[in-house]
Image 1: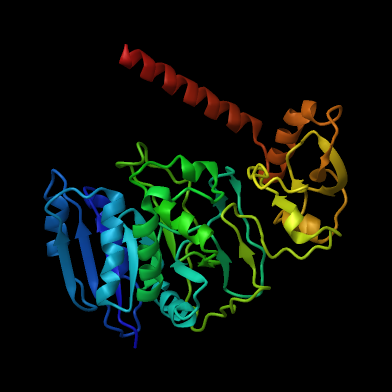
Image 2: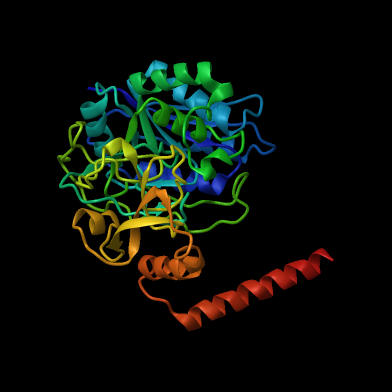
Length: 388
């Protein structure tokens, strides 16, 4: 039986901590002893520590760690990851996360399945419905299993085994000062502050060609509470939680033909015969890779000044299905970048944006949109007047 501890990352948000701990207490652990560790970074308030000490945990040992000095988020999460030295695995949850009642069984089964697979760098409990870097929806292709593989590491509910964490941490100690060298990363990741531990983990998975296991139905959701890194609470990253028990997950083996997505959320395993060597084509359906490797052929939704050799529709979802099924139309373009075609594409950028909006949004309610814009404008004016 694996010894898996739950580690809660807390700082100064007592309401967030209460909500998370209540969801953990309501979860099903199937009679397994589950240690709970609440790690609290130093702040100006004792309220979080007082609540953590008073909280009753009926499923095993509870430990509250109060750090004497402020670590900051990166060092704090690194500390929590290093707790794997005492356990077979840890489930790490920041305080604005909320868990499904059935999260533990998923974690246990995925750890049993993938701990010995060197290509797996972590287990995600959260599932993305939004590609943050591209600022567009993300839908993984349905592969007949309960999980798939994505190179984007996770911070909104994740599990690491002793092996997974130690491999990353050894790399981190050697590469901290050069984490973004010799690797293509999304621009949003590159812009994250030094307090981000996640940008290091994403760099690690990309450089070492490793992946996180992702569920199709999320076991955690994110409240994005106001705090150090978020000025205003919002529901942008709320996702539907698993609300029923899955006794036995159908988990895919990690093979060359497994469903895999890269750090840009582009499907690596897309099987299409373009008549082009695989290494000579940039798959960029979200349109923000910028073909940094200067590959001759570029498959993208961007309108570019190159020769279009094939066009696909932008209608089926997820978007790669239009290419896989050879659906001819407008919206996805296969370019040969060795031939310039400046006369046709650059003036159509606005039309391209409209096309993507129509594809991504189910319906455009003009009245609601105008009301929202009026509200935002009014709030901005009032804020400016208060500042003056």
